[in-house]
Image (cartoon, rainbow, N blue to C red; front, side):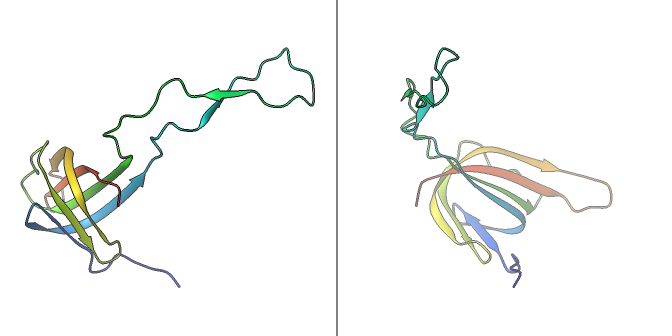
Length: 122
């Protein structure tokens, strides 16, 4: 059975918006995996050589981003913080910070805003 996003809405910092698309991205930024340091001097059948990553991810980077396209003529202020609440095809309620925001005007289309939020892990 196919699912759809019909009826999906979002609210940020107490303001409701009409959604046209949402992309929720989750990236592992923990940096707690290892890197492969195998080399050509190893013989066939040798074990893969690894070491811990020398650099770790930022303590404040959650790896969670939500990009939302919405109907409207006003961009959401970059750097602003608040609760991002999404309901419908995707459910999410988390503290968020606006990373970027824009408004697009195009021929034969309504004016749309787009915002990308960095969200807390939930």
